[in-house]
Image 1 (cartoon, rainbow, N blue to C red):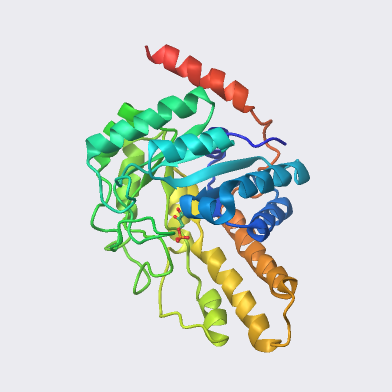
Image 2: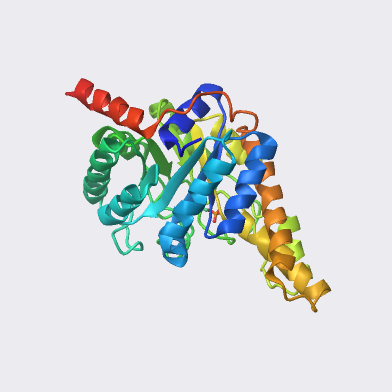
Length: 343
Ligand code: 13P
């Protein structure tokens, strides 16, 4: 199966009332872990690469690994998505390379740190939408600002400084025409999200529900959605790691989100934890080992388990063959028709 558009995956998820995990990658083992989990659970897949991942891997390597994934797992609809594009140029280069979906994170200025104004965000996102849709490529925008920093990208903070304003969300979608909308509801990137199990004072699910009520047909995206499970933390600390006590986003809150318009759920940290724990275990228990395969295989297996579990919890499991993929060429026509109708 060729790489497919994220718009189609999310439209189908909306019809079926489920969510789709979007998992970050930097290398071959992570892509293999996701594809194996997808095959096992029969799930459609979104694989995403940040700017950091693109520069770490020289993105051509990642691109060709994705093509290999599409070839080796022909039964799985597979989206290649740019996570947190910081500028028009970054999104353009991803589209030119062959990504089938891009995120223009105009909530921050091009430095990837400083919150932008609403008008700046609208202008850059709209420019990316115009370009991407001409190429049949999906666009995710962001309104409000997430907390934390991931791969050098982020405003820092707890995530409560710039919670999404529902009114602005409506205006943003109208002015930009994005296919999916990331909102800020108190989550943040990384392992340190909450200092105890989050309640409504720090994880604003009410806000999400309010936004969904005003934008019932818009695909919402939850970033910073790792659950940071205790068992994954424990493995790391048991084998010499030094994670401080921390809490992530409980899966039941994500499921509440899915019942209220969330179609894409971003997960990176949980997989990083699983990989690190598995590698630490081999290093601690078998210090004589030095073949990278001896620790990368268990690392890949540990990540696969987490991804398969999330695919089941988000509801995408079993939906890989529900629909025939729409080609990117056909998506170009779809968007052209949409903009003609809007005139
Ligand atoms: P986590 O750090 O919670 O996994 O979030 C990842 C993310 O939102 C990527 O954009």
